[in-house]
Length: 67
Image 1 (tube, rainbow, N blue to C red):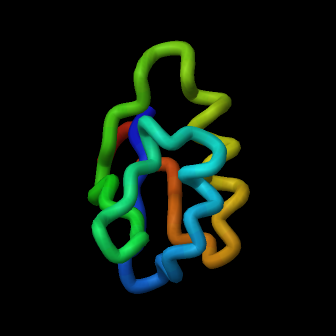
Image 2 (image 1 turned 60 degrees about the horizontal axis):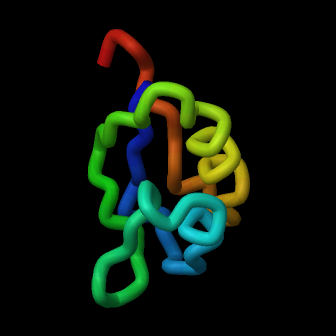
Image 3 (image 1 turned 135 degrees about the vertical axis):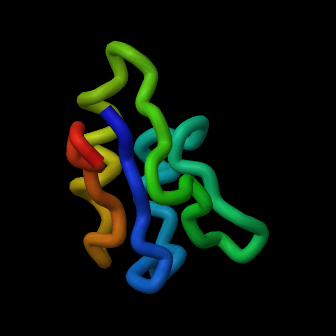
């Protein structure tokens, strides 16, 4: 599983970081810097999906397997 961020949608509210700070990292201005396709460690898929779901701007997404 991979997770990406649409930086044009990210509003820097850091809800994802509150779920899993070691994965949903932020830049110096408080915006997501996970990039377009960050690998989720095995066994942490539920945490990644929770981080995606709490984003109030829907900026985070699960990258399709074939992408």
